[in-house]
Length: 55
Image (cartoon, rainbow, N blue to C red; front, side):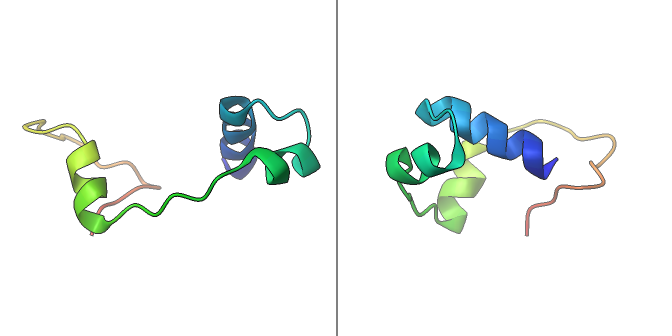
């Protein structure tokens, strides 16, 4: 899962390797409120994912 996320991030910034990712990446801070707002609203979850949760 970690490698999949890394590959996805590299694809988002257009990096072909790790050093290129370091050059092109930009850090953006997301607040807890922003994280909550970025999720779908009024969705009823029947089964929680074993590897993901919101505080």
